[in-house]
Image (cartoon, rainbow, N blue to C red; front, side, top):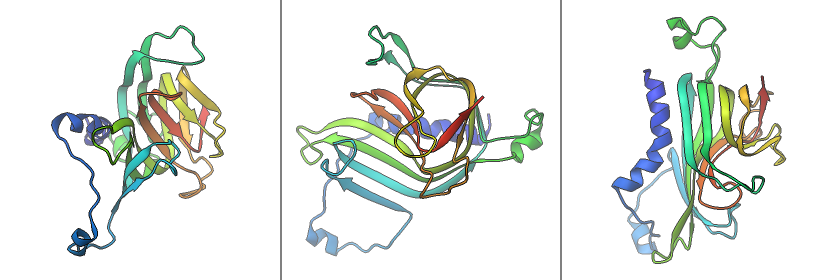
Length: 235
């Protein structure tokens, strides 16, 4: 197993491992405490936004990291969220996977070079991701007695490149123009063997948008939900 494959899986499961082994509570510092702090602009920012200004309608704590990553990764099988899913389009839902991706290839190598070591070491095109963030949405974030975690989200502000797989189940949205009218939108869609290409027109950071993986306990996007802001789907 290659190192980048291990790292990719690690970062997917990391947010769900940490809560089982540790506990922390967010608290605002008062003015006197802030006087003792020496700080400068760095690679990360941490913010708390009130529910009145967030899209989710909940209080959100967000960590943003100025990270850029290039990767070529292969995954035999990626599965997330096996449960009895509510779907307003399906009156008789049953147990299944929210995400069931087989023979996943993140990035691109030329046809015929997949079994060649040079193909792995020098792929035709890496998958590029920029601006990693992690967000947790709560009700009553300032009140420990009533605070409740509703959503966990992580992703990148901008992505470009190919994700090729047999998408036996895809829950989420894929928008081809970042205009909030996704061409694909639903739970457990069977897209089949296709390639999702992010930012195919090379619009760049700040225009094309990114991708996000979220875990929600209610609403239309309950369960695992994958979002692409600007991507096309091709056979």
